[in-house]
Length: 132
Image (tube, rainbow, N blue to C red; front, side, top):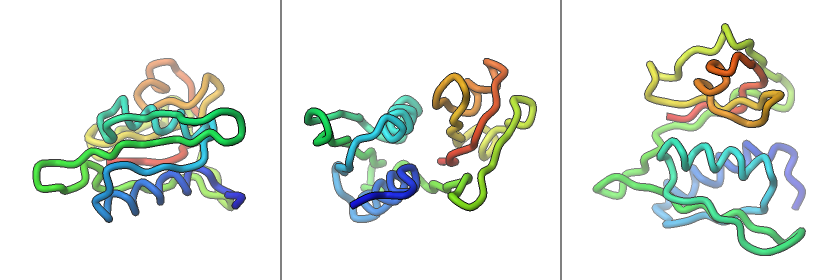
């Protein structure tokens, strides 16, 4: 089934799986989804990110992370740029999410990166989503 917005699909799948208290979630692979999932892993929001399969049958497997009483680590995920309204920022306009407790993921000319890395490198881009 074709998906118009792969980032929104990734966020919804992770949110639904964590609300259902599942250990992992599988979805079709794309390089953009994998880059966003790897940032989530690097920031400690998910346990692991793996790619299974070959060619067009690749699958992205995301292991979810929970706190002590099976409460999800991810409190909220919001898609910022949508299909009908793209949101772009310059390096000077990048602000911390939730006073630094969250992360914004940007698509820049140097690749997909989190907000503070983009600010440090002096590049702006499209704000894909915010997570805390």
